[in-house]
Image (cartoon, rainbow, N blue to C red; front, side, top):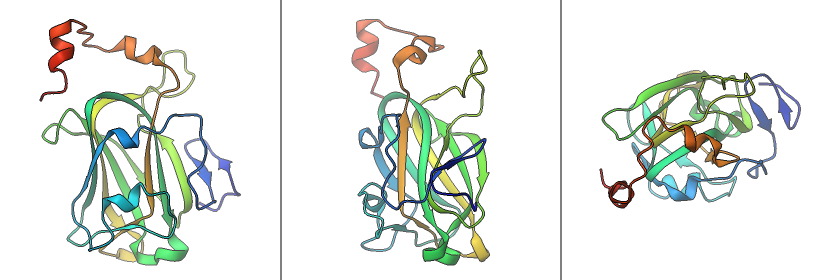
Length: 195
């Protein structure tokens, strides 16, 4: 990924600055409960959200490694923004990630698999892969849980470093009206967050 600063190719928006980029999609990461498959003391899931480019989540266990965000309500997720730095992290840098989504940890479905080649910066991409009916963009994903699975690292590294992760929502609420299960009764809304 040797693209100039703030470059855009057909799949990725790349920012080489170390601070999180300002993007038009709202950051909904704070609405989720974050967990990871493992971490070294002082390098836990809080480092994914702190906005500090010098901190990072450091896994401490066998591959694959997992980052899981669980939302109390079903949310529309448009993009994922991840900060990786091969120059700083070398063999700890993820090379292949899989994005999964679902209503709980038992029904996660693979959405897409992405390969990186020596990434350095914030990489933003669509969570989903299904195009909008009008051909203008990609449909967001409606889910309670989003999981990022790191299956391989550069140079066959075992542990991994991720310096930042943001889940971005939709620009407007038009998609929420297209919910395949649009139950809007008061009792349903009251108990919607119980699973």
